[in-house]
Image 1: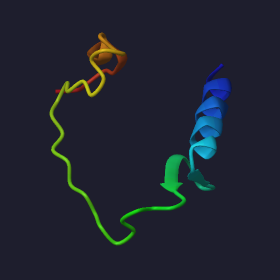
Image 2: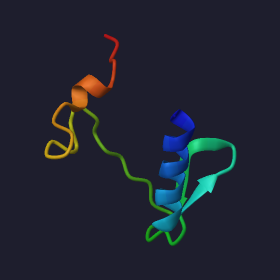
Image 3: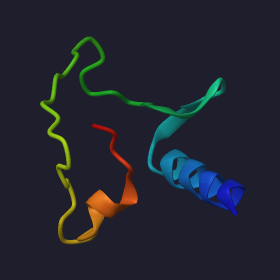
Length: 66
């Protein structure tokens, strides 16, 4: 079943303008990158839910070690 989800992810990403990296299944690059020479730093908080409306149980999806 995992292979089905990985293929689904790949197909969705490719349809939306991302190119997969052949050596890493989880790595995609945006084809027409609007800021190709810019690196963005985002603060990450433990347990932060970026999609509360769509994934109300987000924290339960991941096992976080202390």
